Image 1 (cartoon, rainbow, N blue to C red):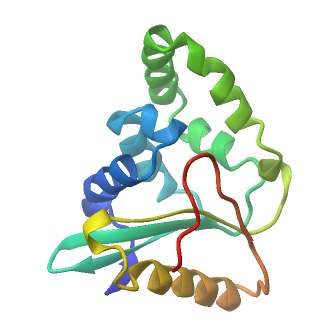
Image 2 (image 1 turned 135 degrees about the vertical axis):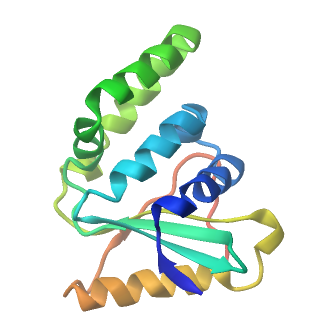
Length: 163
């Protein structure tokens, strides 16, 4: 059953994000991801839907009606917490500073357009149509909000799978 992310589901979403998405945000660790998804609940233009079965989150999708300055808005909500997380990470991974600047200066975050940000399904549940169901739920939500098109970006080693 697809539903909106609640505070009680964040730990499961973080686990999926960390295990299935191998990018910079995952590298920042569970503390960062937990804070990110907690804060995202308070960003009016950001949404996360989950596919849940028997109290287990099988997959999730995050999207926004306006990508403009999105990460800056998230970080600003809990600035000190995020600064401490970044400092801890950059002290032990100084080579990642360039990567973080590249992400924060991503041209799409200057664009005031809707975007699917993240979609992930636990590997054991992939191939069952969950990704497709989540994607179609985003399409439906965007249509309800008056958007006829939106961006989907793929980065690094995360390849587009048939959904």
